[in-house]
Amino acid sequence: SRGGRPVGVPEALILRIAEGRDRAAYAQLFSQYAPKLKAFMMGRGLTAIEAEDLAQDALLNVWRKASYFDPSKASATTWIYSIARNLHIDGVRKQKRAQTLPEDLWAPEPEQAPDTHLIGVQDAKTIGVLMQTLSPEQREVVRLSFFEDLSHGDIAQALSIPLGTVKSRLRLALLRLRAAFETRTESKSV
Amino acid sequence: MTSISHHLDEVILLDYHRGRLNAGQTLLVETHLEMCPHCRMSLRLFDAIGASMLDEVLPVDMSDDALELALARIERPEEAPEPRVAPELPAYLKGIELPESVRAAAFKPRYWGAPGVWMAHLDAPKDGRGLTYLMYVKGGMQMPVHDHQGLEMTLVLSGCFSDDRGAYHPGDCVSCDEGDHHSPLIASDDCLCLIAANAPIAPKTLLGKLLQPFARI
Ligand SMILES: [Zn+2]
Ligand SMILES: [Zn+2]
Image (cartoon, rainbow over all chains, first blue to last red; front, side, top):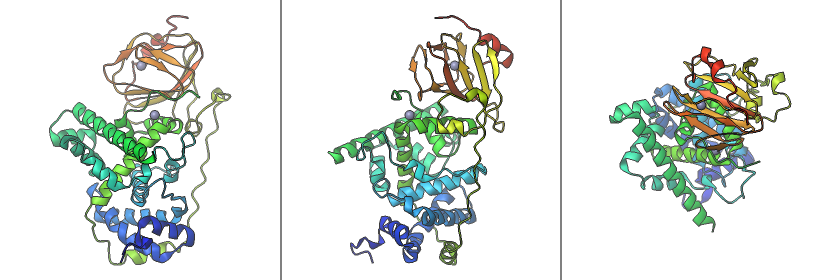
């Protein structure tokens, strides 16, 4: 029952957790994101059990680090994604090193005016739209890298193209997304 | 601080984002990121790209008791993270202004490659032929033209050097891939770099020869 009320918006839920340790908000956020995280991590080759554990851990981190969340810097989905990504990497590395905290990456930029280059404000849906501006070949290598987490070599094999072509396609696609992102952000802030 | 004009390759940044780099490459990338808002921005973009895919994915049901477990877990006290002891800065690095990432890393004792040139390897588990080290070169030296057998990334920490493609200042990162060859020239100030190579540039027996002072300026 959203009905235009901001109460179910994930950004608002995280703020309610940060400010009031709101368990109902957490339950709602968990139900929204855990099944997606589980599916996403299974797409990356984790078993259903591993993926479910990772989703649990990621949401637990959301609860604990909610006070670091800044909706002017990142959408809820982007922030939650970055937490899950870090957990996944640390799991893969199985290294006993201090976890890279997402708040490091989303910390304020001292060398920039506060309202320039705010990628995070743009939500994931904007990127979804920008992805459509890529060529089908570029979109494919981005999807295989981010969603299926294939190595460049595996992508080359899957698409039967040289490794160098995979890298140059990926490079072009990423530069293009970045340029499109910056243009959008600049035109918005004017 | 001069602004950074040579950035990390987007593909390398993406591999960092996906946790696919070895310890030495990770250190080099993290050190550049510490110094470079431009590349930090790329990483944020990558998170937004990943998030757009998370948004589109078809959910898979969690187990029946998942929410109950989640609500129980948030009531448990958080285990304090293990305190992280920074390694002691080796004497040869004292007095040099260094990024935090480099300070927090452990390096082996330095050794001299040639008069005016020392190297110190990162103290990390061996990873294939990968090699990561600090290299200090006295101002005014030139290295002879040499080939690369694999990807080599060089990050300038202090001082400056140049080759036929440009001049590199603190924070700048130069990548040489297989088949590239060049002949770096060190400016008048001493230069300290962090180098992460997939393969050594030359057999170790030749390294001393390679690093002979070639020309004084
Ligand atoms: Zn950069
Ligand atoms: Zn070289």
